[in-house]
Amino acid sequence: MATFVLVHGAFTGGWYWSRVRPLLEAAGHAVWTPTLTGAGERAHLLSRAVTLETHITDIVHVLRYEDLRDVVLVGHSYGGMVITGVADRAPERLARLVYLDAAFPRNGQNATGGFAEGTGEVLDQMASGPDDTSWLLPPLPLAAYGVTDPDDIAWIGDRRTPHPLPTLSEPIRLERGEPGVPRVYVRCARREGLVQVFGADPLQPMYDNAVAAGFALLSVDAGHDAMVIAPRQVAEALQAALSAEPRTRDAAP
Image 1: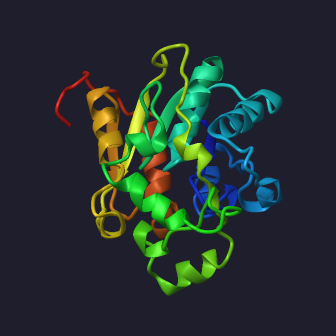
Image 2: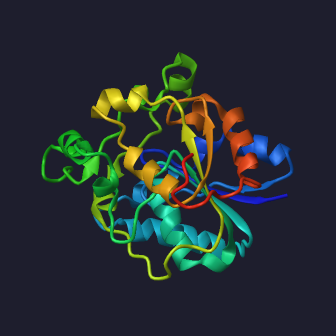
């Protein structure tokens, strides 16, 4: 059985995996769902000082202090930036990287620079406001992420939290080159919510990077926040990722 560490994306927290976690545990896996600094139950720690490096360190410390090894490290959305950094800082603790509809940056690239053209401008407009809050990105409409069912919306409630913009503009610094563990990209097939908000699929360039890098490719038939909409599909995809074989670099998917 595997050890999964599931890293959430912007606006949420470890709680966002609570529909997936029991499914993986029921299949015999160990599952950790840490919350990044400033999010979820750690919202009281949110400040201008929170950076991408802060979040990378959060997860490195989970691996170290819980003494986790042979970890299947999963990142959703912004969490892809985080797990890419963790793979550079603590490669000896990882068995596999899984990007769930996630950012996959190149060395020296930041999140907004890796998104589709125009995405950064849309995010800046959403964050515009008084100087004391202009560094915070408010949660995007749930419909952008494919969450439209009233029961799902009610379950999420008001638990989402603003995301610090500096984490999206900070370039990632990788010193070890590409990780020596298999990498898998699980794409959420329903893109219409993201396209409606941003005018284009913001993650398409990141996905193209993963295809060119030879990632194993899987998909789930759901919107971006598939762990809420289709948790069973996500759990099945994460288990399928355990044996998914990387493709030849630059081979067509």
